[in-house]
Image (cartoon, rainbow, N blue to C red; front, side, top):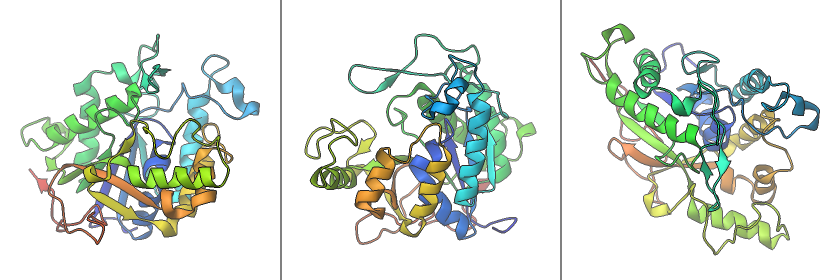
Length: 312
């Protein structure tokens, strides 16, 4: 990647591993093409469930230390994707994973107790200012984060959406916090999404293969979780099928959170790049660019000139 790439993408995620699940293939593709890819992770994921028996002592309810371990996992995942610019919002340890609980309806909700410096409890302006500084430094034409529900309701995902949305607005105001750099207006903002048609096709392939346990309880023809988006609401589909192996390697690097016999790898083994090789997006800010034969933009920078994104 050149020192000053003409096209620059900024992603804002809540915990290590979220980026690889949602946009790992896109990140690898763009990095390989020499485009700027910057990841901002808002917490170290200290409250995550440890899936590796030998590392269970790192859990928050035992010895602790999971955040530092996941910091290393994230670095390994970024190496697998070829991404060299990855940061923690406000610096490592500034904001703590809030934890979560499950609602009876199947989506995440706030945990009964949260740490004092939990990201979900952070002052919105203070957290947004940390991101404003990054936006004004990197000057991305495109920013990717979660929808208003955080995909599945996790309070840190919801807060990342709020922080990213507010920071984009503040960063564009020339008179706002001049000490954080020159104003920059991000031209396009996307929310990561999962295509309903692709998810149903993937589930159908799993069930047809005899696999009834992966994504247990999900019916290919029945109701789907909140993170699945109707195709009519999608704006972009980035085909990064050549980089599925990079995405799988990044997922494997997040070993405390994702197992190689888990649902992501099961889908990959049964459906190949059909599910994970193309990543989908909803357009939240900016104008849709030219579309491909499926009616989706095929590039998040579609319709943008190199100079798009305005400096104050």
